[in-house]
Image (tube, rainbow, N blue to C red; front, side):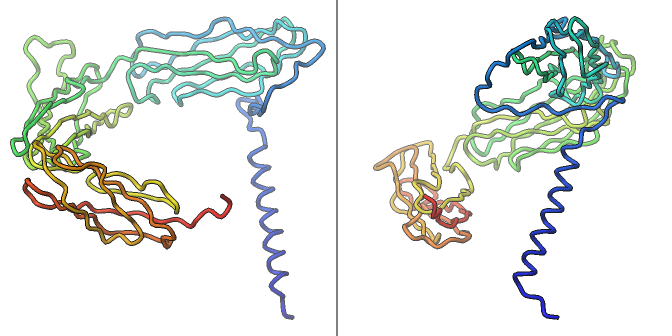
Length: 370
């Protein structure tokens, strides 16, 4: 028996509908948490009319709670009282938190007038990757005057270690000279700390570490570990603004990786921003992006050459400048597809006499709906 193409299409569509309905059922099916069905918050759009008749009213015992100073392995909980001061049943339609370190447990989802329910908020610092959490707890209800109630939970977690300084700023560095700075890591809690590795997010910066002797008079944690991390700005670092990170990896579960920001401004010679231009655009496009060329002294831009098909480049500066900008635009009717190539800038009164900037992007199909 020969099966026609339209029959195949109908079968595929029906199969897709079955799969979609099954997925929708799994998503819509309310999960059960500790015997209580969690109902996701209702979606509302526009201005809702004020309902008539008796209505519920949510009232929370406090707007938030600060656990204060806690240990990094100390799991604590706090109970909020949710009272219904209205004249109809208060339904808790959903609740969530802004951090996995805080969990919520509610004694009931339906609160009768003048009755109350306990909302237990449990904070587990091991699930918070930072110093001092400030977590939002959100409660959705059928109170027409307050569909969303927000609580704030905070704490000051004792750190397992400290890094000093927290940020490295080399300032203005002449190209070719390089620079270095030492960062210290000190254990500040009883759990032994070990650096398992350090790495830089930029080829212009290198980092290494070594164990260090405890500072004189530092006996806050007997036998505490201490490390020195050397961060080096390489002499061959490209000119311009440098914003990167040195990543410090440790054996601490709560803080497995800590980023130390590194900043610098490297002067000398010529440099471009960006060093590689990416774009994605469809015709007609006003701009694909700009390339800026900087120098320590005024120089000229004599010409622009490019092998990027369907792209026109124009300068926005004339004469001698310390910064020149070129902007790329799509030509009318540019064919859709990938573009990989470069732009060559011809310079005067400066060395080198030309700079090549790699360019990669994609020209999208024109939008016929516009």
